Image 1 (spheres, rainbow, N blue to C red):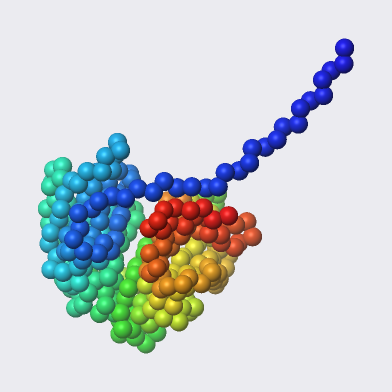
Image 2: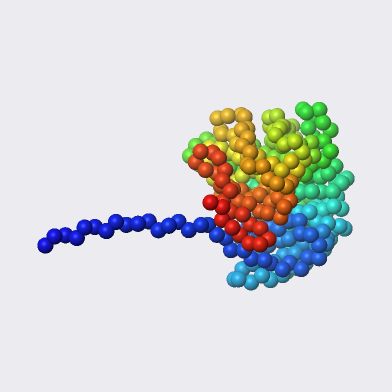
Length: 335
């Protein structure tokens, strides 16, 4: 009896990538400027020009409003969650020159625990530092300064400002600072090199109205922030947002920046090179307002002024591919 010829296995056709779109009715009465997940992805904080910040419970298929927080005199531009080891704490910043820290006293009840009003103009961005540095945050203001506020052991707060003295400036960015992002608390290459597994030097990246992206490091000897290399020049108009990619210990660092010039630039530096190498995404049709990374740092989200959000992923050859496009009408896959 002859054996039957083996059947040829045919791989199933790859289905296009799709994302489920869901609209959350926030109840804000004016434009929403920011939306941030908490550490566990169970709660969502939004802020708006209506002067409020809202907290939503997103667990179990529910979309429940837990709290409406009021404290700013004008639009609230950004909201940020602290690491949960410090409790349920958020920071909000706004047009009223203030950063306000809020702590959840009980489920759905948020209390103001501190208010910072050192800046002389609108505060455009706020970001908590890695928890390894203690409870601290950075804020970027239209007065040109980026400030770092750190809680001391006695519960008081110490504020320091970044001044670009080496660049001959009197502020962090001429005309104004728009964005700030902390470097990861893991050294590049720390995944397999134990010597690089030690605590890294604290670093920040900032973007401003001088069209520049600047990187800063903390000098322990002088207790001050100093430039870490020359400013990164590629944008031809205001830099609206910067985002330092999370690190899993790989041997490179990546920063994304976007601006009024309709550009998104990916800056990469490996642990053997002191130079940042830029790669531009395809130019957008409108100013780009925001860039943000996935938790693993391999997917970049880009929000532009034409009401579109696109997701980008790096290819093996170092190029970046648009993998999905999220619009008001729905979500489409990009082949």
